[in-house]
Amino acid sequence: MTMKTMTLAALLLSSAAPAFAEGELNLYSSRHYDTDERLYSDFEEATGVTINRIEGKADELAARIEAEGVNSPADVFITVDTSRLERAKDAGLLQAIESDVLEAAIPANLQDTDNQWFGFSQRSRVIFYDKADVANPPQTYLDLADPAYAGLVCIRSSTNTYNQTLLASIIENHGEEVAREWAQGVVNNMARSPQGGDTDQLRGIVSGECEISVSNTYYFARAIRKDVDGLSDSIDMIGLQWPSQDAEGAHMNLSGAGVVANSPNRENAILFLEYLASDQAQQYFSNGNDEYPTVEGVELSEAVASLGEFNADDVSLSAVAKQLPLALTIFNDVGWE
Image 1 (cartoon, rainbow, N blue to C red):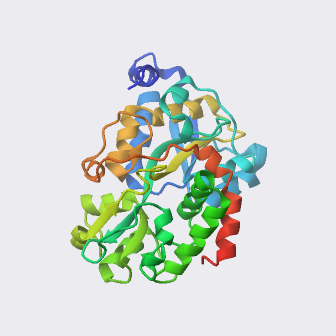
Image 2 (tube, rainbow, N blue to C red):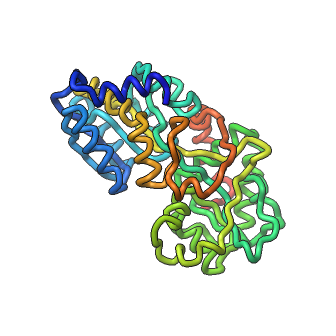
Image 3 (cartoon, helix red, strand yellow):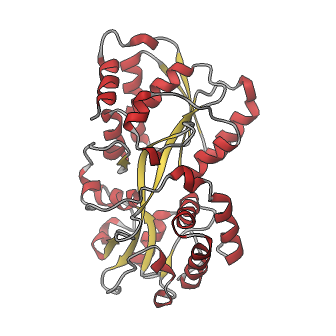
């Protein structure tokens, strides 16, 4: 724990803490996890600030904030994936903030360069494979486009934000030409048309529809921790390959948040973001939803730790976000449904 996060923890736990121990916080959230309840109740108990939540899909919430304009009651926008955070920034929905706590706790590559959004939990997008049928699984993301894997790959639609950010990271790390060749190669290697969510890509291995799939780690860890229909009973047949370990490392996508541009409770909003960077909140992300903390040194849940150690891509996700428009163009050009 850094000195800055220790200072925050002391603030939240001390009797003198309620510098903001009154008023409210209006949270617009597209996170749909029941385990997040502890995040909210503990913050309320520690600070005396009441959280009012509006929940919905990210794009719907962003459209609502935009429509509400300067009269929006929204204080914090929290959502999943860098692409959505960047769209909110580009639409003028967020504001820059200054926080020594956040600057000290959140690695620079996991926050917006203009301090308009910060990442608070991570998921790695990795390669899974059928242990019995795939002797030499793809070692890198680029390997997924190798003709040797023709007809074997299950992966989600190009409309999926996780895939959009993955392709944007490939553009940032390897350039447009390589990224375009990769996208075309993956389309050529698909075992079926893109369908379903990340768990469905893993179920595709169980059903035999595909032998290789791409999914976020927390879907797999969840199936280890508790029963997931059509997956947990066959989890031992699926191998995990951390991609690009001798190159850029495994791609990480974020769950993150920012203070809304016209926040009526700005100080409470900043305090909430700082709370999300505390060790307590970071452990909730891992224990409750099988995610990786963004703050270094926070203990992982048993299920997440069981996935093993790996090298993560430390590319700036703010820079990756700038490549999203080109990623969408490439997906369209190569016919990735």
